[in-house]
Image (tube, rainbow, N blue to C red):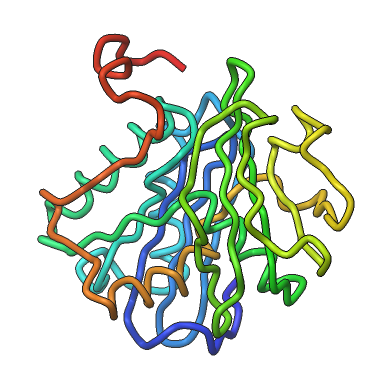
Length: 237
């Protein structure tokens, strides 16, 4: 069902994400958001396009009415990032649409801002192999804004640049996998474990306004780990 929103412009934006166990699609059109989400880690490639078709049908438009495609650029599962990138490429090529990549970590931080009014947020995704994907964000005019750099590292190596004397909200599967990441001053958000496409929409508007969108040739997935390893082992998690 559509939801009223004042957080996005009148651009018609389609957002996709399959970078984690969650598969999600969102569309903003004429001041409404249409969204679909499913936890189906091995079914992303089968579910994504039907979800796109569903939100377009609910909005009573076709893909030609879309102004911009936002895609989850990672970090996350190598296979999930590849699926999201290739699906975005296919959709954008057919209509010659601009695209913009949105960080999965940033999307989770945006959810904490929208749900909790959070001012400081730390996000962590389980990266396997004893590591986490880690990002720290602050709320600037309602948007999740990265401080320092996103990183992949062992739990004991994470950066701590926020003011932990003030409330810090924490979300993501990394905190389940590595409870030692939770320190005094953090409030763990148990319901915000995965990025969702709907929270990419205001970030996409901001990025597009700042000139960060590109044509489809500019698609730029972010693995954080060495991309040479990814190229040598296609299809591996």
